[in-house]
Image (cartoon, rainbow, N blue to C red; front, side, top):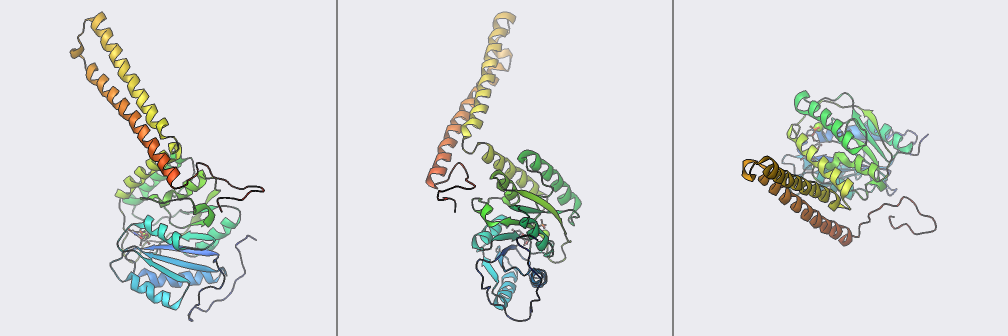
Length: 342
Ligand code: UDP
Ligand code: MG
């Protein structure tokens, strides 16, 4: 028996639901929506079907990411019937990561479960994810073992990206891109999302000391509407990965990265200079007969630039931490002390 498991109850979905009396709810579902009008009513029915078996209190935060179809109208119809359904509407399309961030910001549940609105994730899996979380994990990530997406433009690039991400991040998951995950709220508190970075939340969380695991989830082909992504997403993911890795490894000391590259470049410049002199005086080759003067000055300039960039980013980093009162560490627990992270 886990912390989140409760006995089964029957819920009549035909009547209007008041907002749940208990606050905060056990579960917040966060659902980014971009032109999914046909999927929303079906998704709501499926959610009710699965969640009624759980007897957890829940809320569903739908974030309409600037849809140009009737998605918001559909949401307002559902929200009028059921106060547990809440909606946030963006002024324009800001992207899935922003929608997810907004949903999390507006949610109150103890556990947060993001999922897609297009019925590719199956709400039936919510139960097992939440139960797994109850076993003592902070993040349970879905793994679409049998993924129903295009092979060449999605599955193969994603397979490669997942391998690279695992290698670079040191966190071993098979499917970062799966939206269906379960998080304890406490772990999301200090995580800010940018770009395509929602997939990296388990990595951030793990770096902050969270216990992360994965479990297989069902994945359905998309029936209504269209996927919003193609192969270009893979490049964004790789670029985001570089940013994440950089932030993690030298965010508090960027001069170490820039400075090391700078010193290497200056050493290469110096080696080019020495070799130039050796060639001239011992092998009678004039400076301009070799590419060494150009190479030497290029390396020298790159080196100086890198060190200056390192200093600049040190200043930026300090401004960031000091202006926002950010800590360079994270406390798990304290004894006989107030916990400033609560
Ligand atoms: N989505 C969004 N904003 C966007 C693109 C997508 O909110 O700019 C939502 C979309 O409605 C869906 C989820 O994000 O609920 C995943 O999108 P999609 O199904 O297109 O991605 P795929 O499953 O093909 O990776
Ligand atoms: Mg989809």
